[in-house]
Length: 290
Ligand code: NAD
Image (cartoon, rainbow, N blue to C red; front, side):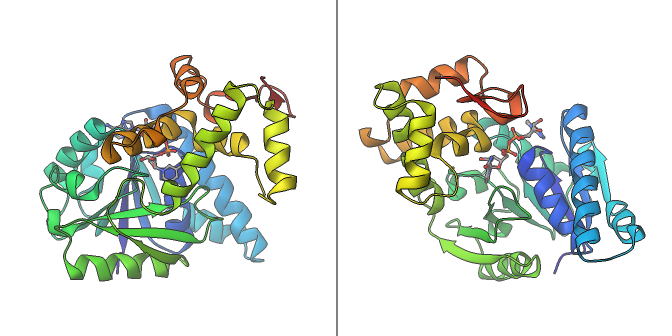
């Protein structure tokens, strides 16, 4: 359905979406307010495409050709001729609302807008766009190339055509679609984030150490990754933002973010992306911080 995809927000999710789009032959325009994030995204996209095409036994020219499909810009006019935009800016409703206003100023009126929000109401976000009926939740998983699922979430205003076209887009990227209703944090994060938050409470209350908690869940519950390692991978700011949406929008104290999670975010210890979270990533082997 889409020939050219816009990606707004060049962080780990944004560049992940750019990677799979380019690998599938789609042109991509990546926009961010931060030039350093765009430079890093360009490196990550190139790295991924080199590995991807080499694994397929293709000539290096294939990877170069795919990498050339992706442009990077701090100017929102780069998305003007896209058929679909996947918004992947930080998990903050005010920022996202402003982004949708900027998208409206530039984007072709026939194009669809998918938001990669992890938790925020699609119905509410759609009111900040100029085309609520062409607006939908497209929740990719991290890392995007490796994870097979995309949650598709309709807002109250989303049209049937948008729903069908955007499901087809996810399927064309090789993803399996799960349809979720527009409730806070949808399916995956409604279940996953309270578990991560509980792991942080377990640490906060001294029930176990970082290693004790992660080893327990890996060997005792057969999880491939411990909950604190996973929190660091997601980003502690994103984890906290999701818990705040669950807590506020469901008005239920069982979703109260752990004070230790709040403190880590206040300290700027956001996990892998800042080099420190529940683990310290300054050496080859991550070192538990508690
Ligand atoms: P990130 O912190 O890695 O990247 C966010 C990017 O947004 C940064 O590069 C930042 O410069 C950019 N940004 C901030 N304000 C902007 C603006 N006004 N215009 C354009 N760009 C702006 O975050 P992420 O992990 O990539 O998450 C992005 C979105 O994807 C969030 O909504 C998050 O909830 C969602 N998501 C995250 C995960 C995950 O595991 N981290 C998984 C699925 C979905």
